[in-house]
Image 1 (spheres, rainbow, N blue to C red):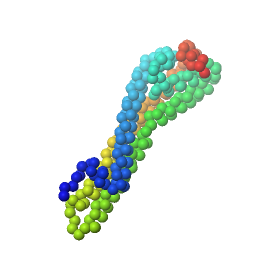
Image 2 (tube, helix red, strand yellow):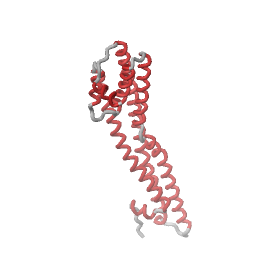
Image 3 (cartoon, rainbow, N blue to C red):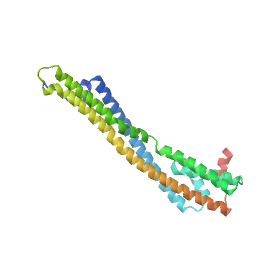
Image 4 (cartoon, helix red, strand yellow):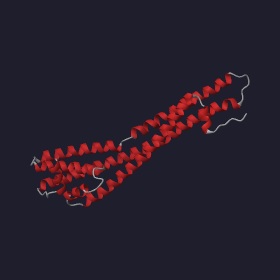
Length: 239
């Protein structure tokens, strides 16, 4: 008798428990691949925005004009630009209230820290899920493997003469469970490590630029020269 060892037949002929294992692993794989593409795009976009903003920040001599320019962009509020906007808005608000320089800088740095924390949360989004998939998929697949092998041995115990055709389906479904576990785990682990490295590097760049920005504001604060920003005036009117 010829045994059908196609993937579809291995799934349909497998025990209910192994089918559940296969479905779980397949679902985890689909979700993780979706998040891999989504996170990869988001991190590349964040890096591109940072490079553009960093270059513009280094070349600018008027922070008000830079703020006005960012306020007119469609993607305002994304990445490092949001950090700049939050810090600059708080600085001007305290400056207009004629707060002491120390209070102005303290409030500005607090706003920068809050904005940086929010951006860190954005960059880390879904990374814990990828780490979880990479950690548990192998063990879920191993559980399916053990169960499939047990099924094969039970089939051997009920007959007097064992043949390869009798154990092949059980062994095959066990190996398929292992393969699905690896297929779900390996890309998730690779993506998690890759994205974590990108996220750490971006956050270091964010922190360094925030320090540069804070230094520029400190120098501007003591220069007593502060032209008005149209966008900031509009923001204040909205508040």
